[in-house]
Structure formats: C-alpha cells, structure tokens
Image 1 (cartoon, chains in turn red, cyan):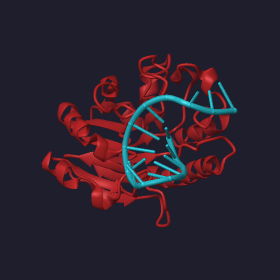
Image 2 (image 1 turned 45 degrees about the vertical axis):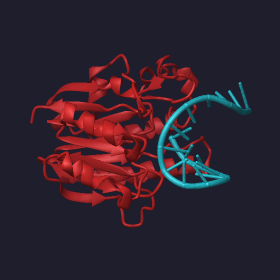
Image 3 (image 1 turned 90 degrees about the vertical axis):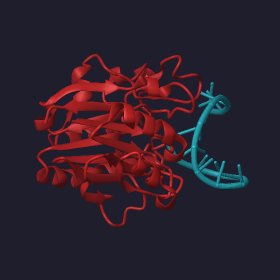
Image 4 (image 1 turned 120 degrees about the vertical axis):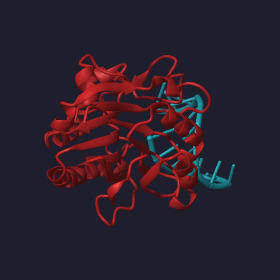
Length: 254
DNA sequence: ATGGTAGTTTGACTA
C-alpha cells in the first residue's frame, strides 16, 4: 500500500501534473495541501474521470486539503470541529488505514498573530489526534507540517534557526504529536537528515538545493513496522510550473 | 534589513 503527501500550491494550477503523477505512481492514497480553491471550483470531474475519489476540506484562495484514492473513502471527517474557519484537515479511512491530510499553519513570523494561531492549532490538533489515534490502530498523518524536525532536515540550520519553521517551541509541539505513538518513517530511513521536500521559489533555491524537509508522514508503529520503502519525488520540482513542494510517500506491506 | 517568485486575482495577501 502506497501513501503519499504533496503540497501542490493550487490544484487548478497543478491539475495536469497531479493527474500525470497519480498515473505513474498509482498510490493507494494521496494527501494534498494548499488546494487554494472553493469546493465549487475544485476539479472533481477531471479527477473522477481519471479514476480518483476525493474527500476534501475547501475554502477560496487559501489552504484546502484533500485525500485522493481509487478505493472507497470511508468515514470522512472534515476539520477538527464544526467552527473551524480554515480548511486545514481532512481524514478518511482507506483499506483499513486512517489517513489524515493536514496543512499546519505557517505562522509567518515568530511573535505574530499568525504564529500564535500556529501554536494554538498544533495544540488543538494534539487533542483531536489523541482521540483519533485511540479509535484507529492503523493511522498515518500526512502533510505540510511547516516544521523542520531535525537540523539535518535543513540545508543550513543556522539560517533557519529561530524562524517559524525551525525553533525549539515548534519542535516541542511536533514531539508532543509523536509522543502519541507516531513515527516519522522518512526520518527513520534517513538518519543523516533529509531528503528535502520544499525549496523556495525565490533566489534559485532549487538549483542551489537550499531546501527543507517539512512534508512528513507520521504513522502508528504497526504501519511503521510494515514500511518497506520511502520516496521523495524530487523530479516534480523540475519542468514547467512546478509546486514549491514535491511528493513524499511510503510503501507499506499491509 | 531587504528582496528574490508564485498563486489567486487584478491589489494585496500568503507563503
């Protein structure tokens, strides 16, 4: 079973690329982030015609997350609670695995209102995930965490230290999530750090490989023990109109 | 300290 995550930075701008990638990789589930479109304008028809079911949380212009699969999408949950104005979480069960697609707030700048929202969101997410995990022995949280887990996950940690993406406070929040009994399957196969999943569009960051690993798959131990391969599709940062993130995934023998 | 690019949208915001 292959499960992957990809921050596409607009599904409409990336639709051809996403459909081509789905056909080539044929994952059992793909988690998407930054759809940047209202439900009314989401390309359900194109994806359905290509064979993909969709469970999503939508809002115009910003955020938006989805899970795509050829299999039935069971027990869809949109958002952590009913009064969540930002579309940052969707969960569904695929072939007995609880799949959660998240887009953690970026936080913009330490000390800002957006950073306070990021920390509050992570706090709420921990509470939500604790309950979800209790209900689902096989669970994977996929998404853009906007947190650099280890120094080795940054091209130059000194440059990023103290930013919203890399500081002790956000790392404590990530550890707190993992303390619920979740494992970073990509990190376990790359103890030296990396591979990067995001490069800034600016300043020729990709050709200079000034990247970060911020797109993660956290799984319950049951799945982590069955993980036989992880991948980061770096080629998806190349060519015409790439996202600034690339797909990250894992194959599990279940 | 700032700017560099991209997407949505067509001005300003978010990343």
